[in-house]
Structures are given as C-alpha cells and as structure tokens.
Image 1 (cartoon, rainbow over the protein chains, first blue to last red):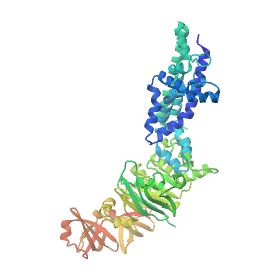
Image 2 (cartoon, chains in turn yellow, purple; image 1 turned 30 degrees about the vertical axis):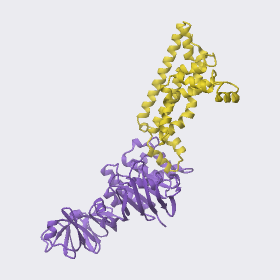
Image 3 (cartoon, rainbow over the protein chains, first blue to last red; image 1 turned 90 degrees about the vertical axis):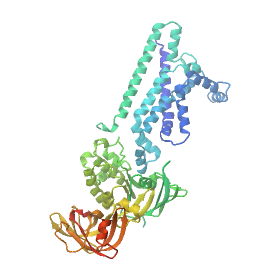
Length: 227
Length: 355
C-alpha cells in the first residue's frame, strides 16, 4: 500500500526544510519588510521566482551548479565526502530554494503590517533594533511566521519536479511520497496510488485550513481577547 | 544649564525641507505650534533621533545629539516619546506597557507608580489597549514615557485623537503632571487652546520653518509677522494675578495695573494667563450708557495694522491689548496713534488659564 519509507522521508524533508526556512527566511522577511534599499525589488523578485519557474528549470540549474563537474560541486565533495545531487542534502537544498517564497512572503507581509511607530516607541525606551524585533514585531506577527512555515512544509511534501531532477529516485534516500505515487501509477498499482494521493490531498487540505484559520486570527485584533 | 539648542535642516524622503532654529529653557514646556503639515512632527522626530537632520545640530543640556558626523541613536538620548494615538503595544496590558522601558528589580512597582501618576485607575492596569478608552490609552502612553525617568519629554499631539470632553479633562491633568515632573518637554500641537493651556514657551512653525520663538504670552501678543499673527490668531495674552473672587462665578484679576473681571474657570490660584480675542473688544468714547460689558479700560492707541476690510488696533491699557475694528468705525472714532479710547468687553469674553 502506501510506501511508508517514502512517507517518512518526505516528512523528514518537509520538517527540516521548514525549520531551515525559519532560520533563513525570517531575517530575509524582516529585511524585506523594513528596507528602503533599491535592491529590495530585485531581492523580492528573486525570492518569488520559484513561484513561476517550472520546478525542472530550478532543478536543472541546481544540478549544473552542484554537479561533480562544477567548482561548487567539487568543493562540496571535498568538504563532505559526498555529492549533492542524488543525496538527501541536495534534496534539502533544492527544497529550501523551491519553498522560499512560501515561507518568506507570509512572514514579510505580517512583519510589514506592524506599525512602525511601535518599533520607534520600543527604541526610544532603550531597545536595540533586534530586541525590539523580538519583543514587539515577532509577537505581533507570529501568525504570519507560522503560516510561512506551514505552507513551506506543505509545499515540500508535494514537491515533485525539483526532487526528480536533483534527487532522482533512490529508496530511503531521495524517494519521496510524490515520487512513490508516480511509481505506483507507472506500475499500474492503482490501489496504492489512490491511497497515497488521498493521503497527500487530506494533508494539504488540513494544512491550508490551518493556515487560513491562523490568518483570520492575525487580522482579528490580537489585543481584543481576554488575557 | 541650557535646554534644547536646535539649528538644523531636515527633510523626509520626498518631503519638503524643514528648518528649525531656536532654543528652549532647561525646564518647562515648549510648544511647537503651527498648522497641520507645517513640519512640526518632522522637527520633533529630529530631536528624538528618529530622523537624521541633513545639516546643522541638535544639542541638549550642552550635549551634542546630532551634528556633522555625530548622531546619537534614539536609544541613548533618554527621551520619553508620546505619539498622537499612543502607539501602545497591543499585545501587552497597561502595566506591561508602562514597564516596557524598565529593567531589573522593582520594575513592576515602578510601572505601577507611573500609571498612578498618569491617573490610570487601578482597575484598568490589567487591560490591553483595545479594551481601554482613548483617554486611558493616552494615560498609559504617558506612563510608559515617564516611567524610565527621561531627561526630555517629546509629545506629538498627545490629545488630538480624543473627543472634546476627554481632551479638556486630560489637558488640565497633563499640565499638572508636566509641572510636577519638572522634566523639560517639547509638545507639538495645532490647537491654540492646548498651546495656551500647556505651554510656557512656544515656537511657531509655518511652511517648514520656525518663524518665531519665545515666551508664550509674548508670541501671542506680539506676533513677529503677519503669517505668525494669522497662525496664532489675533489675541491678547497677558500674565495676570487673581485678586478677588466676586461670587456668581466671577473673578477679578489684575493685569498691568488694571482690574479685569472674568468668568472663573475653576482651578485658579494666584497666577493666571488672561486671554482675550480681538473680535470681542469694542472701542467707545464718551460717557457709557447702560451696558452689559463689565470691563471698561481707558487705553491709548499705539498702532494701527490694516488687515483686509478690518484694522487691528494695538492698544496700551497698562498691558498690550488688541481690538479688531472695521475701517469705517476706525475713521468715525478718529483713531490715530496716541489717541485716547475706552476698550470694552464682557466678562465671558475673558479666558483665564491657570499658570
């Protein structure tokens, strides 16, 4: 029936991707939300690129960049003793890039909705910009931060094109649940395919419902609730 | 010791240039007064360290806050900031808002002391901003700003988001609080009554420049130019002293050797500011007939300032006094500098503000 090994791998990949995107995406979102630099538009476009680019294009460039014939690929191999393509690390790198907009955009939107005067008030009361971010901006925008993580989790769970290009189809290492579904169909195992597809559908729907519930919460005044 | 010394030029991105050149005393409230969009808030933000002047300097108590190559960040200036609509932290209750700038031991107690001082009822200490009225929110904003013991308070239209009854109630308390704290303050307002009620000194900002600065009665009584006169309104403002309560809610004050009767606004004791709009003053010559005007002061005309269809007549009644007349009545009364005339006005036209 459902390929449990592939499911476990997918869940591990999605969770690690979300965690990495919290660490990498949050500072990027904070910069996008507050910066007045001209380069901001370019960075915004770059972050959004995976939304419109066919995943195979992204996968192709990653392969070209980190393949054994490239300088970056050789450097990685020298440092870790393994190649990026067709490994879990390579898959992770590809997923982080492919899911970047799903994490960064909700985070940046929530952070830029925070009234700038609140941050200025915090600075005037002695807070450094970082401290004010943690004490004021984050508590006011956490629903956006959580939706960013949830969306990138869901997106990674369903990713197909990039995974196939970069990871291939190695059981236990790079064979994710969406690839397993493809294999089931290729092998005419329709029952297993139906079970897998149903699982992915249910998971995606749950995640989206959760995200919308969070966003509703973000827009109803957080302050209005009783303590 | 000196207060603020400002001489700078600043501009918001894409906005007009704003120039400020004036100094304040080391204590008391200086009002930045002027029409909306004149640049008052921009000046305040430059003093706070939230905007960086393009050139010139900002000094406070002989310490340079900003100059060429020098810019002390807002965190290190020790200013207490009160924004127009409070800008309270919506995720924190009143007590945690007031405690925000405090560190270490006794932070909760000090926050509560500040809230008490700002007059927030104890029942509201655990409420979040969304559960507070506009007036209560401004009290919390004040408490938050004064709790860490700032060296300078900066208030940007602190009362203008409130409805009229709440505004008038809080205005009197704000004045008492600012007086008690003894911390110098810079307060932005476009409301003349607020300026008169709260200010000791005043700087008039028009079209991105400080046009006049000085003691509040001097600026109101002797505007430097026509633009300032238009901004502050033609008004007599003089220091006065309460001499007698007459009953029936009337009070007699002494200003420049004259006895003037006005309506007792309550809260007066000793010193006051006497305010009188030029439109309320009528000029008469000869024996008075029966009149409802309780005040009749013999004056001498000092100058005539034509202003459109009207003439602003500057008078000396022992204190400088302005009257607004039509050109016709000016001619009929044969008003020329040096002429003697009686200035008459009703007691309700006399506004007395506690000092």
